[in-house]
Image (cartoon, one colour):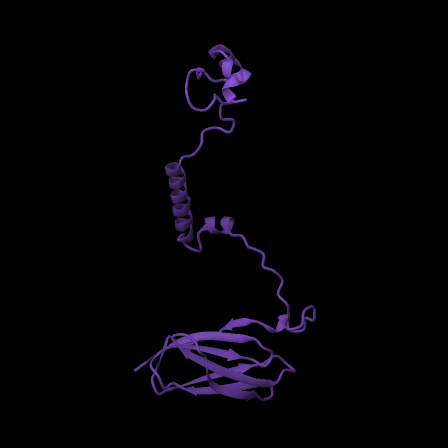
Length: 185
């Protein structure tokens, strides 16, 4: 049985208006009369795009409000981070040993000069600190491997090639630190 054979398809305009809130006549072709929108008017594509642009502009402008503005304190919120495993954690072997830090380096250095890294290891830790580098992108090359004596290390590398040098230090416990420096002529 098709929809035109159903009782609601034979309703008069008055019955349709009373039951469905619509005045579409039965002689109109296409789909049957339906109930009015319950959730209000729909947003078209243009209105939705306009709304997205306005929200993006507001968020962009809020990002450029001076840091000492009183409104910033009211808008500040922290996103909780998942708990990090510490070095002494034993819940999963190996997971507590992976970490990534940042090395603070000068913006540039002269070709032919030396770059020296100094640091302290956590108490009771010993082993070898490796310094690797890659110009522009990997593969990584081993530049130095120095033993940590009495909890401290010093590694010195010679800058023999111009370009952007990415540096990676790997500590005895598996943690890594990375940084970049531009080597200029």
